[in-house]
Amino acid sequence: MTEKQVKIVLEESVKFVYKKTHPKSGSPHMNTPSQIRTNAGKGHTNRARRYDKKWGGVDLIFDAITDPIIVFDAEFNLIKINKAAKYYFTGYPIGKKCFFTEHKFALACKNCPTWQTLKTGSIMTSEILSPKTSTPLLLKTYPIYNKQKKVKGVVLIGRESGDVPMKWKRKKEY
Image (cartoon, rainbow, N blue to C red; front, side, top):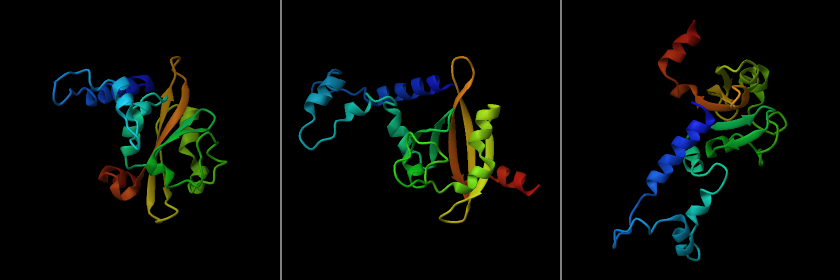
């Protein structure tokens, strides 16, 4: 699935969530974005503004995932991280190169799966020790392709090895 297809699916799911009707009149027009904006009173968050950003409603889903997710461009710049990934960084790493940030994944640079995915265009898997808990972390990287089928970025997903299915543990033993 390409990045564009993923965004379309997630945007459709967000639209589905907001297809509600007014509780009294039954009108489907009460929850349009313009009316949500005018109805937002003092001290209320403006939900509709979140969907105007580049990532749109995907942010809600992206931050709800408890595994750390980091999105890189082809030059190793961090484009996006979810809330779970912020735990592994100090400061604000967005827009900086991964190897210039003061991240706690310093051990992963030795066998960097992000670099390997950018180079080969294939899914890569590696393991590092968590700097806080000393438990193994499984890192998987997935390529992001542009329209010309060239790798334009990488999505890195981390997971504690205790959560990894048994087939991964069995492969590790051999």
